[in-house]
Length: 141
View 1 (cartoon, rainbow, N blue to C red):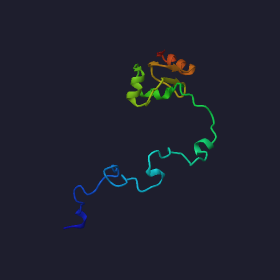
View 2 (view 1 turned 60 degrees about the horizontal axis):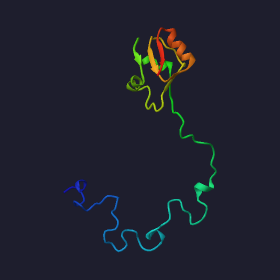
View 3 (view 1 turned 180 degrees about the horizontal axis):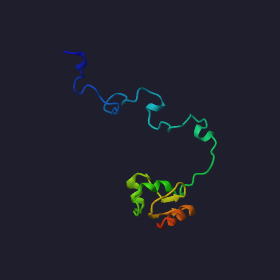
View 4 (view 1 turned 90 degrees about the horizontal axis):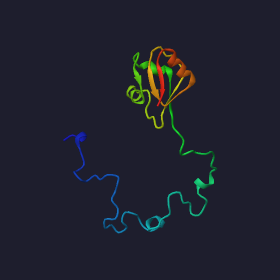
């Protein structure tokens, strides 16, 4: 017998999620107190004192309906072969973008040396000019 091979008996070790209410006198809630009874206060309740989440100041505005547009630079399009089609699916495949929720916009940063047909949601004026200067197409979908 070796100490490094010892294991607990099968079924003797239980997981951290203990099932409450199985005939135990207090059903796993300890004894007495407000938390042992039904109707215990909600999380964040401070015994009638103004709770922290209401004491702290609220700042700004969160627009729930805003458009989340992912941006890429012209230099990112250098990963494509000359004369290829650039779409949202192609960008995802190459790993240039991760999650285009409401669309993709091409910005004019960097240089482009290949003729590409780019079909995306938006283009900056400089990006569109640089793509078309090389004989490519910048099509808004």
